[in-house]
Length: 345
Image (cartoon, rainbow, N blue to C red; front, side, top):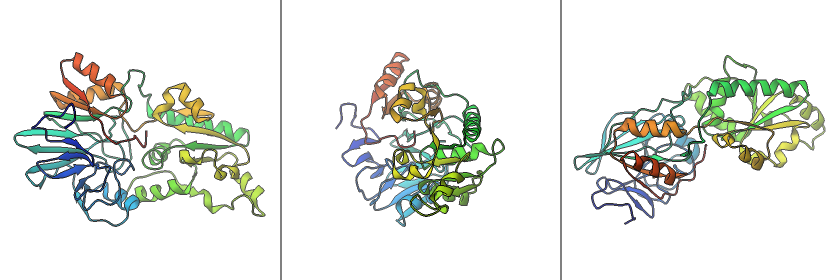
């Protein structure tokens, strides 16, 4: 039993992950278990080798893409289903396509495990839905007052302007962003602002196709791999072809051989971490754009209060800072140690 655990808790921490004793299932387990309820498809939440996966219907294509064919049980948002002695339902988290909060009702009490979530509008997924509960397990990735997000449309407009300036210099604009969620959100937000095609790294294009099949509208994309790689006879022509183009790539592409195909390029990064100038320097990129799929500081506080929860357990990131502020507001708050790492920030 952890220091903050109580004998009648509906969710407790076990070596395999967050465990619900009433239902005998785990939420986003980090080790193989017989039954997993998965909040969304990022790698630190959806891991392979579970016996059975419960997921939102909207999130099922994401899990199939990342985990392959498994034993899945898909549920519509808000539709309750029973596991053991617990009634469970999944509710929109607004994080990425198909992301869900997990509501658990058992023994006369209600807990909600949020997974990752955000409150900003996002054309690629259902909006976060506050769910009333007794105990709320919240993420705390950006739980410091310095993290306050600008309007995403303004950041997208800056990306379009950055591309124009790169084009004037004959450079490619290579924007790094996470392959699941962030890249698709940028492509969707660009519609109506800059409808020119965007080139994509293969890791991103695979997710784009999953989103398109789910009905998410985005600007046209073209895989970078369609053009010859450096080392072939037409390499110089291929490098020239990207001058003035916007290219989306995963962060892992920075500094890799893949980048050599762009003769002249500016690099950018789209992430909530770009709110802090030092993070941009550490990433060694030319431009930072503050676009996050997590709640910022005001949104965390607003979301927690909207649940009406009298007890809050904060996990990942700056949990200690959030716990301190919540306690000052009279909420029974504590940190909860988990194995989540924060992909897609």
